[in-house]
Amino acid sequence: MNLKEIASVIVLVIILQGGLTLLLFGLQGSTPGVGFWSMGVGILVMVVVSGGIAIVLYWLVHRYTTERAIRTAMMAMSDDEQEILRIIMQEKKIRQDDLRRRVDFSKSKVSALVTNLVEKNAVKKTQYKRTNHLEPTEQFQR
Image 1 (tube, rainbow, N blue to C red):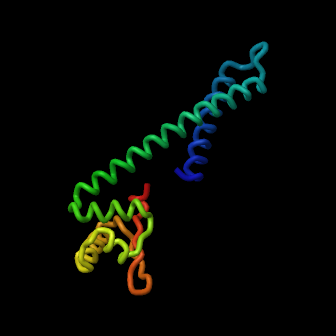
Image 2: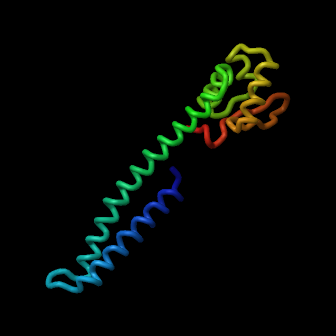
Image 3: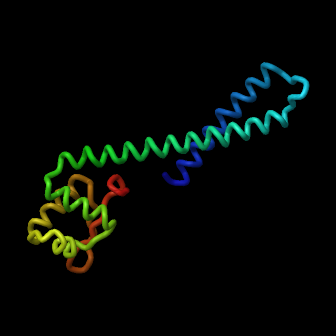
């Protein structure tokens, strides 16, 4: 969850809570002992509490959907592709020749598996000297 998403959730909560409070204050009008400033404090407390709850719920749902998407995508992959992808996800960025040594596959097999993962949008491959840098796409970063 990035800062832009958090800010949008908080702004949405402020708009909803403020609109509801102004609607209720407008319908009820001023009552003895309850002024606009005491309503403002009430709004602030509601925004802080409901904003915190909204952020926690958003984070939990986002985390669950990301994990589920990764599991679903990995079900469509072969065992060797899953093994390669797990290593790339774990390392965040790895050179293809280092990956080959780590899994003990031939160069051609690793190259074919990496090409499959690039086609499935699971891995980004960038040229680096005589090898490639491999990193998971944004969908597969944890």
